[in-house]
Image 1: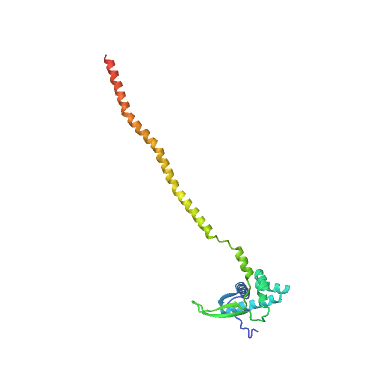
Image 2: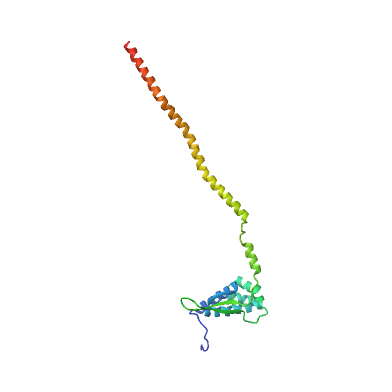
Length: 204
């Protein structure tokens, strides 16, 4: 019989509910706090507190149970190395729930679920800073801007140079045309005189 079993099913099957609890607990152990609805927070709290208890055990069997519970090896390693030692002197009550009020839209009660202990993540922060790309210094940025400005000015000057070269090339052509134009009438006059001389010779 199902007497006194009033646990919320969250409108999900058993396998879906277990996967949801593992995902929420993984997010809580990764970030230290999550914002979700009250029924989901209760589910995540059960899974997370059970995982922390296994982390405090520290045995090989407990590690395998935690991996099967959370379904994430990286988070499980972090649980045993960093999170569980922070709760070494705490017997239960590893999380707290803060109510945030109804959610706009469906008025679902929202809560903030977080760990009660502050986890030391200095090593992770140092690794993140070391892997982050280096920021350019102001002097280097100014030098880069000056180089870009010089390249732009050179690109603007190049068309002018080509235009002047075209003008220089066109000047001799213009001179040749003008010279041919000047020689044209003189040649016509000479040809006319030659024709007159030939006609006079024929008459004589």
